[in-house]
Structures are given as structure tokens and as C-alpha cells.
Length: 175
Image (cartoon, rainbow, N blue to C red; front, side, top):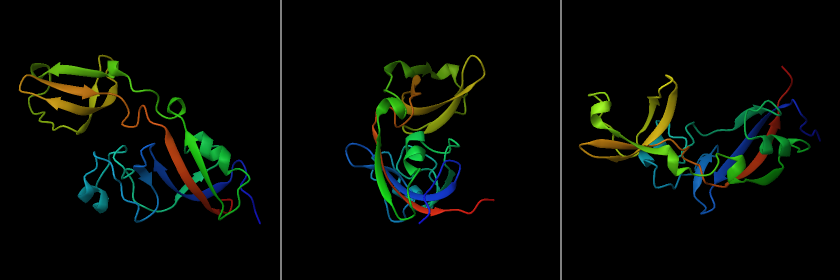
């Protein structure tokens, strides 16, 4: 039976979980997110684009990637080498290799007067804000008051170990 090699295009199925067992991402139909941040109606309809909620920000179905092309976490790509279709593995990606530690310094408050008048965010909204260099940074709305809005620029999965259970479904023919 063929084994996956560096440079092969493959199809995998996976489920990503946190240490508490909650699913943050999955290619498997029927795997429901169970994160507090998830809006289950958005998740089920495929309208959710919050990559930290558990919906995964994409529709269910196998993922295609090229081993070694940095399409996914390198630890998973490396683990695929030598696997045959149908084989399964579990890999834990520690915080430092995933999205890093949660950094309190990335939580900041901005006075409403310094924000656009038409900005009316709700807690949990994910937005893109421009910094002083005109670069866009992704933030999550943490608190909203009449005077200010508190944002968190940490990745939604910062501070989390990520466990991936995955299966090599298929090695695709060379294109």
C-alpha cells in the first residue's frame, strides 16, 4: 500500500480539540462545536467565520493539503509522512507551537470618540482595526460601554494546547 511522502497532495479528515475536550475545528460532518463562543445556528448554516468558535470557519468535508507546503500545522504535515490511507494519528500541538501564550498586553481599551461614529459592536464580534502603521490587526470585542470599547488582539486559541485526531483519507495523483 502506498505511503504518503513529502510533496504529496493528500486528503485528510480531522477533529481539533482543546484540553477540556471542546471541539474548536473539524472536517467531520456531525462534529458540533461546543464552545461558549459559538452561535450554533451560524455554525450549522455554514455562515460562521469565527475560526476560534469551533465551526472552523469552513464547511465540513475532507481537507486537501500538500505535505511540506505549510498548508497546515507542520507537526501534522510531518506526521503524515509514511502514513497509508486509512491510518489515524493523534498529535498534540503545545501552546508555544500553536498560537502562543495569552498576552494580557494585547487587551486594550479605546475611547468611543476615537472610533468611527457608525461602529456599533457587540461583545464577541471579531473586527479588523488599523494600527498607527495602517496595518490591520484582528481583534475580538470584549466589553462595550457608552464611553469605550475593550478589544483583545490575541488569537482566539492563544494559550491553548491543540489536539488533532486525524486520518489520512487519500493520496491524490500528481497533477
